[in-house]
Length: 311
Image (cartoon, rainbow, N blue to C red):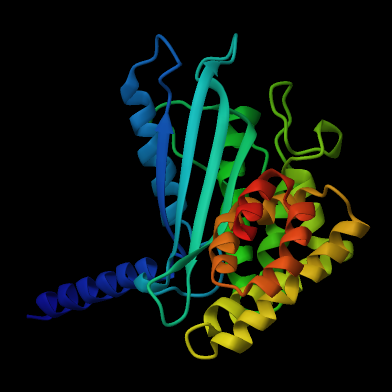
């Protein structure tokens, strides 16, 4: 009888641990791996990569807060591999697209937090080799192997930082600092790019640098107000919320005038352009006439999309 009781207690403890771990995970992430252009590799390898990358993201506890299942952040990582790295078994180059959303209060609508494609993606993947990542030792013994988990971890922290920033002013600083730590200690290899300031003006280095730089502090203020005081209040105080959102665009204009063609501004609009256009479609023409010229300067890529609203 004592043995049965002990086993029962043990099983209960194990079940509680499992429940706790499940609730601890912050990200409900889907991973898609596409490698149609890569020849001579068994497609099962990429299916395994897909499964193991998803397991790596979902199983790890990225922060200190416990998330209930309905609180998990929805995100999709799409890995597109287009060629092999010569002389490196299991080495591939391609791009990584990251999308994440957050719910809007008192609605069925979800707002895009990130919609970004990283074209600096060089990795090494050995089938069934476990994904490993350590915040204190980002670069492991094999840089290209480490670069896969480091890049995934970087965007996991970025997603969490953006989500927390959308609910509390500068709420995501802890996660942005962790992302920057990966930048500062990133793996190094001749095939690896995207972690250094000298490797371009649109990469992981500049994204982290600008998010945490005081020159862009007003953008984080805008990000918080746009979501928490704007979108989240549209259902209860629509006029106040709309007025507040309208007032944020001149602030972005000021940031842009001080930091022209910044990556962070483009990063913001890559996630928000469609949403902002839909928001403006419901805005009086007098307000459109003030806001759309500003948007056409800030988001040149989508200027024609905004201009259609003036017709």
